[in-house]
Length: 619
Image 1 (spheres, rainbow, N blue to C red):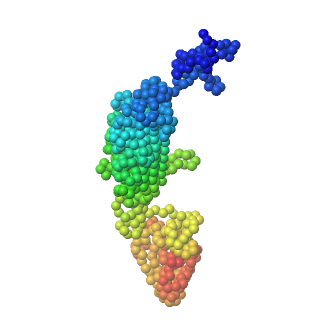
Image 2 (image 1 turned 60 degrees about the vertical axis):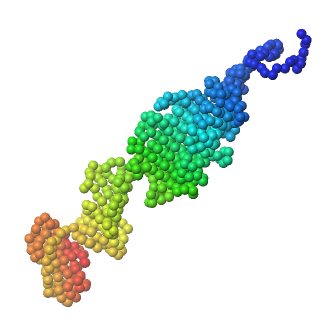
Image 3 (image 1 turned 30 degrees about the horizontal axis):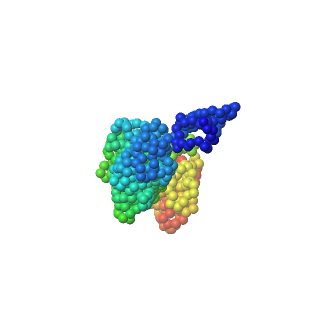
C-alpha cells in the first residue's frame, strides 16, 4: 500500500452515519477510528449532559429533511406529510415558498414553526384545507389538538372552498401568521368545536399580490354538539376584506344551549373593507360573554350583526372602545340585532367608550355608555357591595339588594317624572311617590301625603319661601316663632310667618264691640272679638277658671265643647277703625308678646297656655 497524505486520498460526495473517521484521543494521543454517528455534543451550559451530535440534530426536524424544496415549483406535499408522520413534535419550515397540492394533516401535539410569516410561505395549489389540526377526530367529540402554528404565511387560490388553517379540538396556539389570496368561500382560520385557543399577531391585509380576498376567522360548532365552545382569545388581528359580502370575524354557535360559543376575548382588532359592499366586520350568532376591546371597524356596510334564538340567546357581550366608520359605497349600519323578529334574542349588552358605535336609536347618542343588569357601589371601608342601581320597567332603581328601594324616572307613557320609595317587606300602598309634573301641568304631587318632621330649632341657612314645621313648644325650649305649632314660611331676614294651624276650629263667631273697653269672657275662647271705632280701646284679659277646648272645639257663641276635634285655646281681637286696641292683664295674668294694635285691620292673637299665661302675636 502506498503511503499518502490525507489530502491525497480519493474524495467521496456523500457520507452516512456508519462512515468512519480517524481520531486522536485526548488521553494518550492514541490514533483510533469511529463512526460519524458517534460524534459527541455537549452544550456549553452548567450541568449539560453529553450526547451525540446526531441526537442533538434530531430534536427538531425540517420539512427539507424529507425532500421539500421550497422553490414555489416542486410539489412539497409528500415531504410535509412525511415530516408530520415522523413522530417529531416540532417541525421546522425554513424560508422559502412551498407549493402544496393536497391538505396537510397535522398530528396531535405538533408544532409547525416557520421563520416568519413573510419568509416561510405555504402556497396552496388546491381548493381544500391547507393545514388541518385535529383532522382525525370523530364528529361531535371534544378532543385535544394541542397544536401550534407559528411564523407562517399561507396563500390560497381564489377558487378555494375551505380554510387555510383549520382546527378541530382544544388547545391550539397560532402566532405570527399571514394570509393572502382566497375567495368568497375561503377562511383564513376555522376553529371548529375548539376550546382554550389563542390567536396572536394575525395579518390578512395587503395590496396586489399580498391582498386577501377571503373571510377572516370563523369560530363555530358545526355539529350542534351540546357543548359550549370558545374560551379563547384573539389579539392584534388585522383583516382587510378584499371582496364583497365577506366577514371579518364570525362566532357561530348552535341554535340550542348548551352548544353556543362563549367566553372569548378580542383585543386590538382592525377590520376594514375599503371600496367593497355588503361586508360585515363581526357577526355574532348564538354566543355569550364575548368581550371586544379596542376594535376598529372601518369602511364596512355593517359593523356588527348580533343574532340569537329564543333558546340560545346572545347575551352579556361587551364592547369597550369600539370605533365604526361607514362604507361610502353603500348604506352602512354600525350595529344591528334580530330583536325585532325574535324578542329578547340579544340582551344584556355593554357599550363603554365607543365612537360612532352602536346605533341603538335616536336617543342613544354617540359616545353614550350602556351597561346590563345592576351596578353595585362598594363600601370604602369593607370593599363589599353596598348600594345597587338597576333598571326596573324603564325606571332607575336604587336599593341595597332588598325590597326597600328608591326609583327615579318617568313612566313609559305620560309626562311626569317620579321618585318612588319602597319599604322592606311591604308593597303598594305602603310605598310613597313624588310626581314632578303631570299631564303637561306644572305641579308637584305627593302620594300618599306630605309629612314634615317638626323642628325644635329654626332651619339653618333659612331663605325666603322656605317651608318648615315648628313644634311651637314654649316650655321645652323648642322653636316657637309664632307662639304656635304649625307650618311656617320665611319672608325677610330670619322672619317666619305661620301658614296654617294643626288644629281645626270649626266655625268662628264674631263678637262686635263698639265701646272703649271690654273684658274677655270664656265664651270668646276660640272666636273673634272686633273692637270697632276710631277711639282707643282697652281689652282686659282675665284669668280663666279652666282652659276650654283642650280636647275638642265648640260651635259659634257656645261654651259647649264638641269632643274629637282638638283645638288650641285661642282668641283673636281685631282693630276695626282707627282706634288702637290695648290688652290689659287682669290680676295674676301674664301676657307674653305684643299688647297693642297700631293700624286698622290688624289683629292680636291670644293663646292661653295656662289659665293665667297668655301668649300673643300680631297678624
